[in-house]
Amino acid sequence: MNKNTKIKSGIVYLILVIGSAIMLVPFLWMLLTAFKSTSEATQMNPFIIFPTVWRKEAFHSVVSKMNFFKLYWNTLFLIVERVICAVLTATMAGYAFGRLHFKGKNLAFSLVLFQMMVPSQIFIIPQYLMVSKLGMLNTSFGLLFPGLVTAFGTFLLRQAYMGLPSSLEEAARLDGCNIGQTFLYVMAPLTKSSMVALGIFTALFAFKELMWPLVVNTEQNTMPLSAALAKLQGQFETNYPELMAASLLACIPMIIIYLIFQKQFIEGIATSGGKL
Image 1 (cartoon, rainbow, N blue to C red):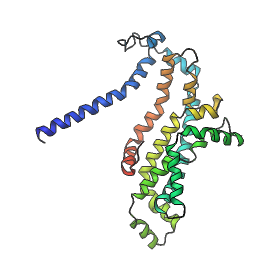
Image 2 (cartoon, helix red, strand yellow):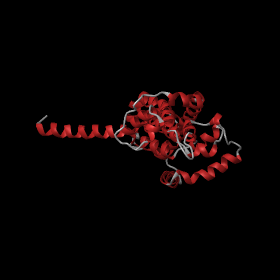
Image 3 (cartoon, one colour):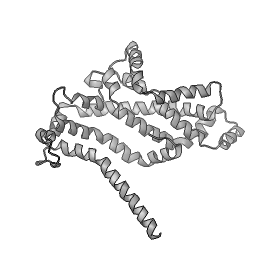
Image 4 (cartoon, rainbow, N blue to C red):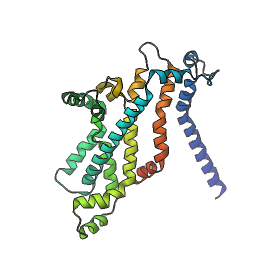
């Protein structure tokens, strides 16, 4: 490696380090604010970054006010349901759009792309009316309803199936496999990394979704973490240390999930051509 190459590599690494540090600033600010007093958290002095005294009162307060065990369970249950439904429907739909030939295929896939291009907020009213007519308000099914199918997952898995060679299907047909057997035993196992990536994306979307849980759910027993955190913000004043402490506790499950599945997450995105 010559001198110019080393300099270029050093500049690239320096830019990446600076970018990573900038991305960590909001998380560090949340961490520091959680240990501050209310006056320290709301004052405008930009030079006071660290708390003068590291306080734990905010954590004790939110734990006593909020049943985090129940909130964790509600959120985890919602994430698992969303991931299972999204992976099942997107895997089958992605295979159909990516490998099969049928009438109306391009039109149907155009509708899937249309759903990705428009804001999700326009679907809230019809979705709410459907859930209300079914009598499923304030239930886990009501929270799950928008995630039964996923346009993003369908597109992601379609790209993964289109990247597989057609010789695999031909070999399966020569061995006597029908369409279902070819999909289940040959093609689907080869897109496992994309399924894992979709599962992580779906878990992230379900974890941070705020508007739908606030619309369809008003009871504390079925409330996920995102909606519970929104309730901490008052109309006239907000206790920011408590809000940051609760947000920090709420981040723990997603950090654990990412640390466990980060390899599959990167592989799935690299091989499928999808972008978040």
